[in-house]
Every structure is written in C-alpha cells, then in structure tokens.
Amino acid sequence: MLGIALYIGLFVWGMQSDRITFKNMAILVAIGLATGWLGAAMLGGEATATTAGMVFVALAETIFKAAIYFIGFGIGRFRARRSRADDIRDTFS
Image (cartoon, rainbow, N blue to C red; front, side, top):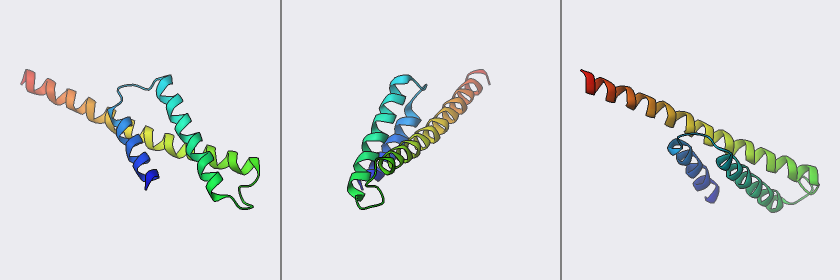
C-alpha cells in the first residue's frame, strides 16, 4: 500500500513540476534507491542475498519510479501547454 501511495505521489509531483531540475532527480534517485534496498532486504532469501541482487532490485525500483515521474511530467506539460493555448484563444477571440 505504501508503494502504491508513493507511485501516485510521484505521478502527481511530476504533473505539478514546471521543469526538471537536479534537485528533483536527486530526490527521485534517493527515493528509488531507498525503497529498492528496503524491498531487497525484505525479500531476503537466496535470490537477493548477494550484493548484485540487491543492486539490481534498487536500480529497477529507481527506473520504475523515474518512469512514473516522467509520465506525470509529460502529461502535466501537455496540459499546461494546452491550457495556455486555450487562454490565448479566449483573450484574442
């Protein structure tokens, strides 16, 4: 449940962002790595007992979270551009 809430939060954050900065990317990577390491530690077992397995899980989580953020960012930019065009039409028509 917490993971789903995190994905929804990243999507909404991406929609509200007006540009991509290093601060956004640093936070995104930190969240992805933290949840990836936590997920790998919770899985345990022989599959992720190695360091390579834990690194793989952490990088996969980071990529998934970045994809969700960028999808939200793209939708937010599209909606903002479309609303500006509608405002221009209302002003000059």
